[in-house]
Amino acid sequence: MYELKGIPMPPSMNNSYPTSKWGKRFKSRELLDWESRFNLWSWENRNYIVTLKDWFSIRRPGFGISLDCTYYFTKSRIICLNGLPKKLDLDNRIKHLLDSIMKLIDIDDSWIWSLKFCKAINQESHIGKEDTCSVVIEWVDTNSMSAPLCDYRAL
Image 1: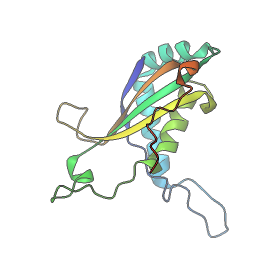
Image 2: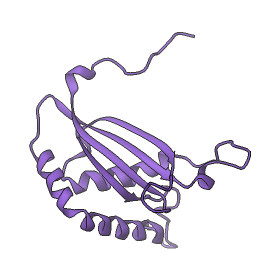
Image 3: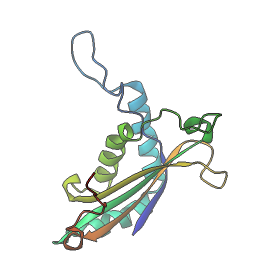
Image 4: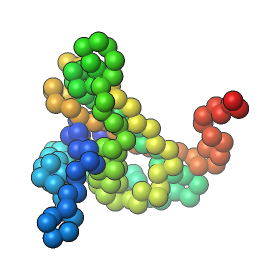
């Protein structure tokens, strides 16, 4: 099991690829900025990433990759003053993070077998005051995951 900490918060997919006046799609400034921050983060953590890449370079038949991702937001970004959650979708930040992590370890995302995402409040003890992510990544036995993990009940 490996944990990647302090990953810069990816931008929302909303407006990540605007359309030019000629009808061509291009990366937004926000996405380009995030890619630069992600590349800087990966450079700063290169020794750990080399170890991670080596571990995942050996493809294991009967195994897949499990990712457990946590998005750390400042409390004011995700909780209203009345205590209710603010409208901040988790799902539209997934693609940029997944694509970048899988490219970083040089493995196709078809190897992802299990995926979990959650929000958390960025505490003082967490890395800085900036919104960040952490990802726990490990091999999982695909044979032991044949049944759904959810409890589906008839209505």
